[in-house]
Amino acid sequence: YYRVVAFTTGGYSAASAAASIAVVAAPGAPAGLAATILSASNVRLSWTAGTGVPTGYVLQRSTSATFATVTSYNLGASATSYTNTTAAAGNTYYYRLAATNAAGTSAYSATATAAVLVPTTPTGLAYVVSTGPSVVLSWVNGATVPQTGIVIQRATNPGFTQGLATYNVAANATTYTDATAAAATTYFYRIAATNVVGTSLYSASVQVAVAF
Image (cartoon, rainbow, N blue to C red; front, top):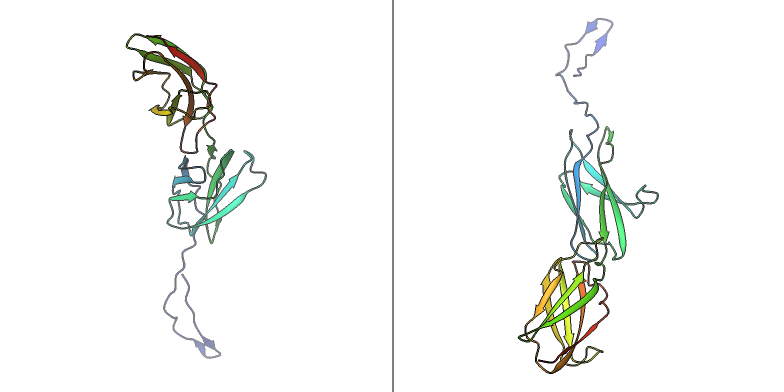
């Protein structure tokens, strides 16, 4: 609190009304920073405010886990989320966040990682022809990048330009039964994995002769 008095050789005046000022401490580090990949170019960041009263946030993005080089984004005091719209497919990004005010800048939050990658191509595509007729396909999924689905293509020529049919299968499936196969027909099958970033390369195809 502060107040002012005037003085002369004759003495001091009455004191002015008191004025107060709050000494603000630097804010605490934000908590729970999380990254969600929305598309090949969009990554959503969310967090919980730390202690104190921030006047803004500084978000850093890097392709280095040590933040050797960074791109910085200045965000408002009330922000609890931000969508980074300049991501590029094929990169793994690292994010960290600090809160700021007039007293200083907090420590950085824990790092959040976003691997903006298409899934790995499934391997080992194999088949069994059973009565019906039907074709039972099986494969092995890649383990490194999450997928949101499987795409199976069937065609009547190896270039997949004739009689093309496409089947969408749930993420992480490892088998599919094609019950629409026709007798006395030769088919070609191939498979790819998808996620919000894009679609993997197609696997090597298999040729299936349905004889009955």
